Amino acid sequence: MSINTDSIREACEIFGKKTAYFLGLTLRDADNFMAEIGAALVNNDAQSAGLAAHSLKSIMHQAGAMEVGDCGEALQDAGEVGNLEECIDLYTQLRPLYQESKAFMEALILKCEEESKSA
Image 1 (cartoon, rainbow, N blue to C red):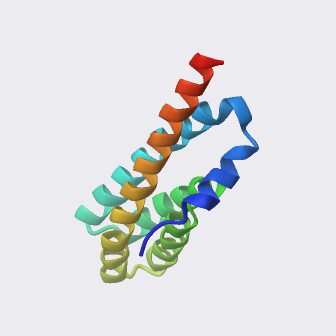
Image 2 (cartoon, rainbow, N blue to C red):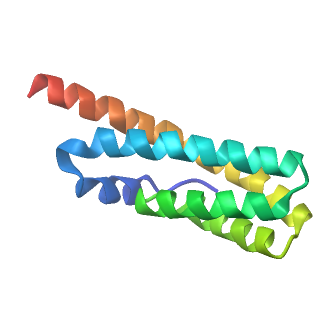
């Protein structure tokens, strides 16, 4: 599965000149939530993984990274019922989606910063 970069671009349009700032905050928080999910799963704690996935889902949907948000939502649901095996499977799917979204967002940040320098 690959991400829909158009949905990320569209979500960022409302932030205008603040797009780089918005994406920077989003990635900072998302990195933390991804780390929390991973740590919870290492500790066999599906419920904590689900709680962190809930937060990840919300910010990634807001940023237009729908595939990441949807996978996070599925992980949240699995965590709520304590299904550790499903949480681990979903995290395995989530990581590459997140990395692809993150790389795209980082490229957008650089583009926005370059445009603001030339303006």
